[in-house]
Amino acid sequence: MTETNATSATNARESKAVGFVGLGNMGGPMAANLVKAGHRVSGFDLVPEALRAAEGKGVRPAASAAEAVAGADVVFTMLPTGRDVLGLYADEGVLAAAPPGTLFVDCSTIDVADARAAHEVVREAGHRPLDAPVSGGVFGAEAATLTFMAGGEAAEFAAAEPVLAAMGRRAVHCGPAGAGQAAKICNNMILGISMIAVSEAFVLGESLGLSREALFDVASTSSGQCWALTVNCPVPGPVPASPANNDYRPGFAAPLMAKDLGLAAGAIRAGGVDAALGLRAAELYAAFAEGRGAEEDFSGIIRAIQERSGKGGGSV
Ligand code: NAD
Image (cartoon, rainbow, N blue to C red):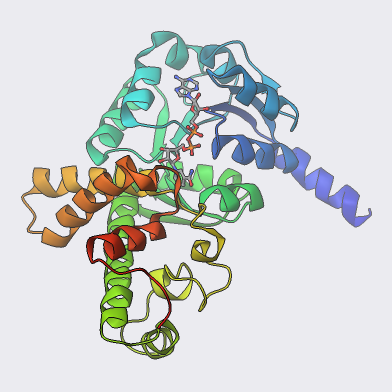
């Protein structure tokens, strides 16, 4: 048997019937990668263009979410908000259309409480729930290099893992229902706060007469080192591939960071956690995303800080 035949034999053996609801910036390429891996994917999106684009990548277009999940072994949802996910599940036609015991994997980034509610609804309908939000962005969705962080029963995670492998490089089982969303929110809170910290340091350095190159060379090899500095550096120059060198085109769009920090802020308040920086970062990103940051990478927040500081952002 040639390698190609062996691969297709493996694919055929593992081929699953997949329902995919939400074929947008993330869901579209994720569904396409499932097709590439040999799964039979039936997809649905409210936006006809999204459905057509997915059809072009081998996804069978369904006329409704219920049609997409009918006969599925696994159903993926990749929707904007928790309200969308719960709204979809509340549509009785959808859960009823899936065969009993279907694995429902929600990859959207949503509130932990909504994720737990989604688990309950899916379980009550006789199915198997998993929350599995992702890190890696649109590039990771296209390149099948996403990281999945999952919450739910170990058996559900084990069943999902081989299918997730077609869309990502890593899947981490974080704990019970909602734990994947909790990990996502906490990770992105670290990222949002650290991007603000790095940006403030560059603006402060500039006001002290320090060149951005000198600050980068020191901080990137010292205790200030972090992803926001060494991969997504908010000033042009030190990291050529960072969005700062491309007029802050995303990358990871500021409105998505604002959304994730909003979810973190809600959880901080609900839990009575003393997370002053998380709350402040949520405020700063909400204001940035509503204004000039609406179309920018989240590292563009440095320009808002420069403006408020009366600094031009030029190299010194
Ligand atoms: P998107 O807006 O591009 O896609 C969402 C899609 O869901 C849209 O095409 C919309 O028409 C569709 N939709 C909404 N309600 C629906 C319904 N009831 N039935 C069928 N389709 C429906 O958003 P996205 O960028 O793909 O993000 C999806 C999720 O992934 C969000 O929760 C986001 O926070 C998260 N996320 C996004 C990124 C990113 O870089 N874009 C990275 C990590 C996580």
